[in-house]
Length: 264
Length: 262
Image (tube, rainbow over all chains, first blue to last red; front, top):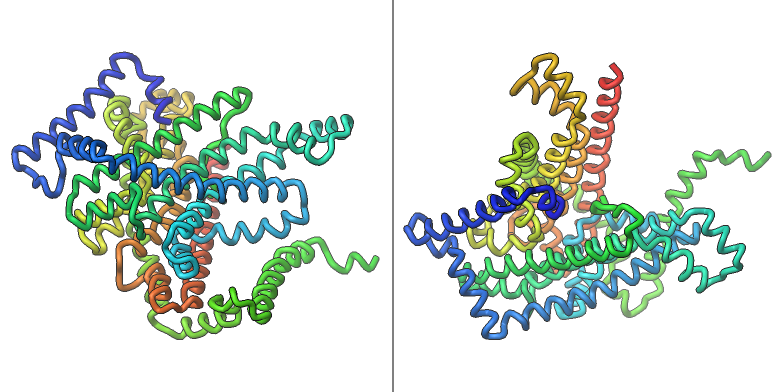
């Protein structure tokens, strides 16, 4: 959406799109330095930049980003892989579909954050609980999109596979997965996006490292610049992940329109 | 002929309820089998008992009422703001150029990321809770109103200019009705988001009442049955709200088709 928007703009409009935010940043800086608004409440952009640079210099930035990314990756691999496998199984076997379908649909009605207290009761608040929570977030979009993709494999492909006598693994890797790939990649993108959101949530709940921790800590010591720096990091990293995967989506799937939308 | 005794409809219903029954039976058996890992897990019967207690407990209904009220206020504010903002950006290219980059930049931050900041700015009270719920509804409604307004068929606008509709009349008689299906989609997405963010709001910004609070309280007292009852309540309420809104959206779309036929 944002990219389409930029493409549609001409050069003059691109300039406008850059100038307006700059003006707002200048006004923001000005408002604080003119004491229209307390620095304690709204950190001016320059201070914010300074905070980010300081964090980068002290190494805290890399450390915390890496900690968060590690959690995202492990949680995503756990949840995404199980979503992928269950999605394929559900699409290929009506029996399993009847078992997992209603279960997933029922569980999906519960907002993911409502699971948090239960997870903490059973798993504590250590790393594994975080992986698990991230995995829950990664699971739904992956299972739904894989299921959709695999059940949408055209009948003629199945027939062709039968003609070639493709069985089990060959059938899966040569026919099913390639054909369902567009949907699967959309699933990966949505699922990674949610993983990112959930890792921040899990870190806000209690942790000693990560971008979310940076923010909780900033709040605890009443350093609003840290909180805002964390907020920017969360936004930028989330955006970068989505952007890269959208790119990949387009590269892989020139022949199909990407399916968008959060699973309802 | 005997097979016909079970009609397709009953078969469908049986299929739909068979799974939950089997699931609950397995759950109960799992507990009865006495696995050590099942020590903490309450049996379905215990959860049912908890529900019986909760139903006669005025706090429970109060929690539900408070949560629903919270969502409704936040959702209403978010819808209104999103509708106005989306309409503005859809109608005016200048407004789009000025606001859209911001809107898309800010939208990149997951809702949960705002929590520490808004707690710092507003403290732990009702305002940040309602605010974050309304922001959750705001994004999808803005986006869908915007695209709905932008995609009003050209013929409609031509027709409007023939009739000499301008300004508010144009918006009221042509643009909004034509954009309605898209707006309705935005509203149903927005409600789902609000409901999901309600849990974030109630769990992260501590409060005395609400279903999220009930779940938290269950955790504090290590009352897992209470936690599970809370989760089920959230799921059921969310699902009924989704169904209701879907019905309304469908009705709106049907109205759209009828008026287009005329």
